[in-house]
Length: 84
Image (cartoon, rainbow, N blue to C red; front, side):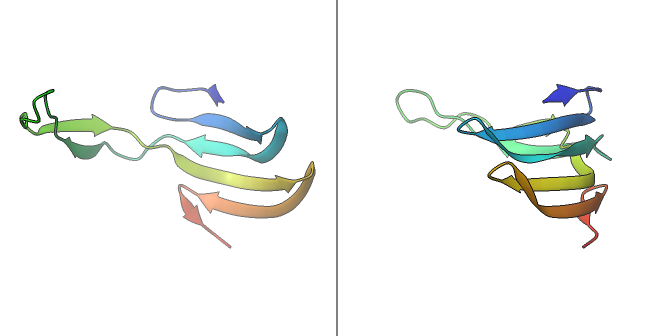
């Protein structure tokens, strides 16, 4: 993965057993997302809930799926929405 900006703009190549299986670009997230996270100590007691803010990059452009080194599927995304 090559990350261009801290909000998520990047390029990804995914490999499995040394073979390329997926490649495409991500665009920066449009907004901050939130997740509620709880915790427990070693005795099983619940700690306070925390709100964790994060960015989730969006698929953007052409994403290609490969099988045996050959392109088998192309999908086009615009800011995370599949256009096919």
